[in-house]
Structures are given as C-alpha cells and as structure tokens.
Length: 211
Ligand code: ADP
Ligand code: ZN
View 1 (cartoon, rainbow, N blue to C red):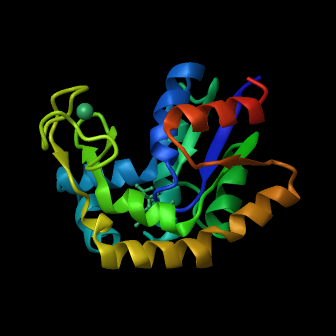
View 2 (spheres, helix red, strand yellow):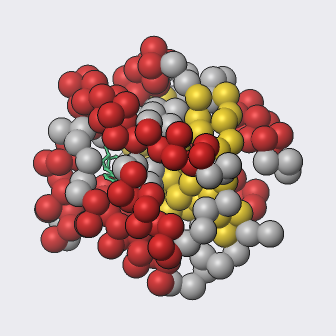
C-alpha cells in the first residue's frame, strides 16, 4: 500500500524534522512547500521574488500559486510509491484542490502546545543545503553557522522572528487548524503527540500507522 501522507500541525511542531526521518524509512519523496519557496527566494526566481515579502511577514502564499506548484511535483514521476506533503495543504481550498489530483491515505496531525512551539521556533536554525533543523540551545551544530551533516550554511529564517512567529500561529489557527476536522470527517486523521525529541515522535508515528 502506498503511503500518501500529509503532515498537519502548527509551525514548529516538528513536521519537517520528522519528514526527513520518515522519508528515509519509507523511501518516499518529501515535498515541503516552505522549502520550495525558500529555495526560490534564495535563487531569486520570479516565484521567489513574488513570495518573499509574504513569507517574511508570516502570511500564506495565495492558493492558486501554491496549488500550481504542488501539482507540478505530482506531474513528475516518483510520486506513485507514496509521498509526504509537509506544509500543504494549509487551507480548505488547497485540500479540495489536492483531492482532485491525489488521494491522501493519512493526515498526520502533530499535537503540540503553543508554548513549546514558541520555544522551538525562537532557537531554530536551518541548513540552507540539506534542510536539517538545528536548535541554538537544544541541538546546536558544532560550529554556529555550519551544518554538521553536510557542511552547508546554517541560518535563522526571517519568518522565525518573533512578530512573524505570532502571525504564523494566528494564521495557523484561522486557516489551517480547520483541516483537522476536515480530514477527521473523512476518517483520515491520525493524531500524534509531537512533544519530545524526534526519536520519541517517530515512535508515536510508527505506532499510529502500524509500522
Ligand atoms: P512552518 O515552520 O511555518 O511550518 P513552512 O516552512 O512550512 O513553515 O512554511 C513557511 C512559509 O511558507 C509559510 O509561513 C507560508 O508563508 C509559506 N507556505 C508554505 N506552505 C504554504 C501553503 N501550503 N500555502 C500557503 N503558503 C505556504
Ligand atoms: Zn546540511
């Protein structure tokens, strides 16, 4: 059976971190709309120029742009064996659009308190090359700006600044949180406790999916 997974949950819930582990475990592609947007911003492509100020402010990119981007990935090969969609869908309109080109098998909902999220995002440092999430206090790289895994540059995302974080949490509550009820109604929601380190969360994930 293919695992067509979407990862739902507030910013800082650990979706990206867990996705890298699940990707290796199940050998399925990991598509992070946030990572794709950030790469476009770094490369200064037309998409990057269009979305930079929106993302830095903690707002959502419009549904048409985002859906078109994800659809492009689905047109490529390699998605038949399953996938992890991390950060998409983020609105009901995106979920409805997704349903027209792929059938989700599990909506994995990361359950976590805002206080934990704020602590994690405040110290988050991201590798520009491999996407690994470090943390200034909990899991720092040996050298502040260099990724231990790949030697890439480790930096602080502009949208991890306090004002943007508040905005992202608000946007999450208003626009994305309703997706839990949406997928629950379809019988696809899988809640996992997102407290603790990635090993602990991976254990919860495997148990919830009978892996
Ligand atoms: P987070 O840590 O908030 O989960 P992501 O890396 O998933 O961050 O996304 C970063 C930003 O990229 C979001 O705050 C938003 O501006 C934009 N973005 C990512 N995915 C989507 C989406 N599906 N729809 C609209 N905007 C998105
Ligand atoms: Zn790296």
